Length: 318
Image 1: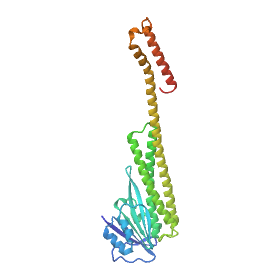
Image 2: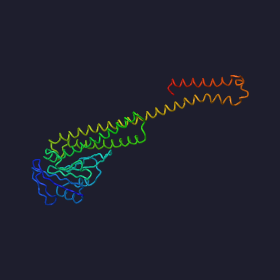
Image 3: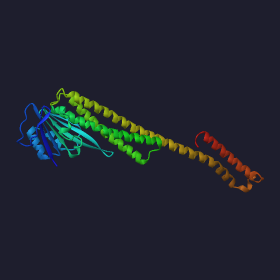
């Protein structure tokens, strides 16, 4: 259900909550308005575009659901797309939050699944309500804070699989789990990289609506995103190392089994060869005519087999 709320801020406090419509009063230069649109419909976008002069391209982008993090500049306004990540059980879900920012207003567009991340106006510290750019920073700060549980979940899962590898060989389910974690970690790294680019533009470029006093705060958010990106990259490397270690251990196990089979084949092949040779024409075999011929033949076979067994044991094939 669409829900659009507005609040006019004066000196960091809510001065008024006017209804959204054509009759909305104009706020003074010392004030700014924050509009939160939850699941807005086309008519809401049309009203906001007419009332605040939003660029049609930015409005069109905001009406789409699958966007990557970015910053678009339109004259005296900017359009910012943020990517939110949250955990549902052991699964990562992504959603977006869009922000239209000017010196006099900030409009945030959210979908229903993002409500748990930015719960409302009262959730942000009072210092964040002085200007729209500080409100944008506070929202980005909340979004980045929600990345930490996601990274910690991936780290915990990877370390769990790694410990399992040290204890025993990986089963098919564990390998499938590793592939899923690798895919999720790569996707999260792309999101973190995009968010870091957004903060970099807001920090280093002359962007409308972003004052010089706010740039250090965006730089701090970017530093945290860079750390998270490096942590995620390290986890991807660990996953790759686990795959390689699992492959090496599997090759070692197969090599050990192959050597054992080859050793037993050599040991058992000796009596088979000798017995086959003597069984071809036993009546004319002079070695079997004497009283001790047959026991001597068996003793020779056993001696050769024992010698081979001892040799293979020294070579650690058995």
